[in-house]
Image (tube, rainbow, N blue to C red; front, side):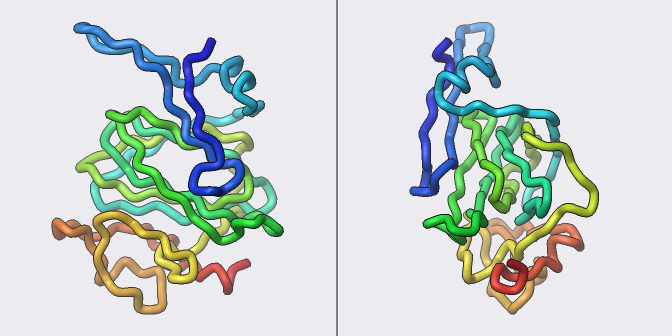
Length: 200
């Protein structure tokens, strides 16, 4: 027991949590528990995860900002290779922080995990040459239930690290890159999401 440290309500947004596991290391390497239901419940997070997802992406890939409409998912995210900037946007109607965002770097080095409750949009930007991103979900994937917001919506104002470019009224990646010249890469779908005021 007691193998995790939880920072609650990060960024002043109720429900968002950064979780740091205890890492046991020696000359052979390390060992850690990446999830322990008893520890989570002891810390006040009674969660029921039903699906695990994993993606592999190259540098400059930006996925998001995604949310589920009728079947919202809580997500517990971590990175097992490389590093990403992970972002959550509060979309809970009536929330004191509605529309506010928080971002954190998740990496294989810091081993931090980011818990995002139901009712948030989510996305991440890959900052390393390769990143493998894993997350547990509190509900199953339901085809056709996905919504999205423009990753560069000026009303939300996410400060994506290393990204340079000028907003031209759409979510298109055209004209955007990282500071080292790597082009920003978004799916065709992610380049068509509307801004928050038009979607919600």
